[in-house]
Image (cartoon, rainbow, N blue to C red; front, side, top):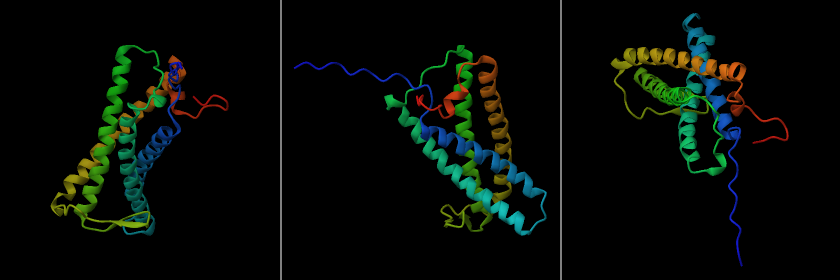
Length: 196
C-alpha cells in the first residue's frame, strides 16, 4: 500500500482570529490607558468620576498585562504551528527589519509598562481590584519610597509606547494606502468566503 505525501497547507494571507483579537484588545487597552490617565488629571481629586476612571485604568492595565503574556506565548507557539504560517509580504529588507524591530520594542514596552503599573500600585500600599471581581494581592512588598520613581518611569514609558504605537499605526496606513501591499488587511477579518 502506498501513501501519497500530504500537501502542506499554503501560508495564510491573514492572521488567525485569536491573534487578531489579542492585537485589537491590546490596541484598545493602550489607547484607553493613555487617554484615561490624562483625563483624570483634569478632574478634581477625590471625586467619584476621577476614582472610577482610575479604577478602570487599573483594571484595563491588569487586562493588558495578561493579554501581553498570552500574546507572547501565542506568538512563540506560532513558530511550531504550520497552519498559522503567514504569507510574506514583498517589501525591501530595510522595511522588514524596521517592522520586526518595531514589533520587538513594542512588546518590550508593553510588558515593561504593565510591570511598572503593578509595582507602582504595590508601592502605594493601597489595595486594587480587577473590575471589582477580585483584589490583586501585594506579593512583593515594594518600598513606598519608590512610588515617585515608579510613577515617573510609568509615565515616560507610556509616552514612548504611544509614540511608537502611533508610528506603527501610521506605517500600517502607509502600507495600505500608498504601498497597497495588503499588510493592514492581514490583521482584519476576511470577507465572507475568503477566510485565509
